[in-house]
Length: 208
Image (cartoon, rainbow, N blue to C red):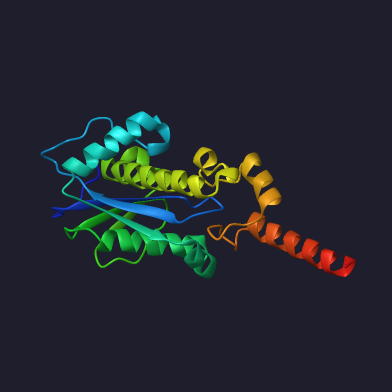
């Protein structure tokens, strides 16, 4: 991991998001302040870890971190604000939820939300900064578990497998079964599915 120098910063929070690309569910963010006295081995970008390793690190982070917090923006907020602004809002919520106020915040990506303390955006930060790696793991395990729960309510869509991303399976099920209340209606594939359903409904009415 790279070393970033932050003068006078006692508590440094890492922030990352999971779920910008899926068609369904919330965008989930996490903020983590690690404890230098209790290092965690093997922190890395959550996408590069096996599920088993990710879950083990998730539990270790929760146990050893000085503070951690989740933030989220629901599909309705994503549709209202757009995914970028909803992600920024979710990041603000994650930082605000920390039990310790960070002196400095490191954000994965190329843009920082408006925060009451200094922050820095780091491209590929989830592979470069341990605090951001920890946040990416917390956010991904949390959202993946939510998709498994959603799969139990809507088993025909396969959410447990594709986690809401626009895979061929998801697109086929969206066409076949329609849009759930948890889908993001502003996303083009979902919007198109709604329009197709409306066209079919009008055709059925005219056929009567």
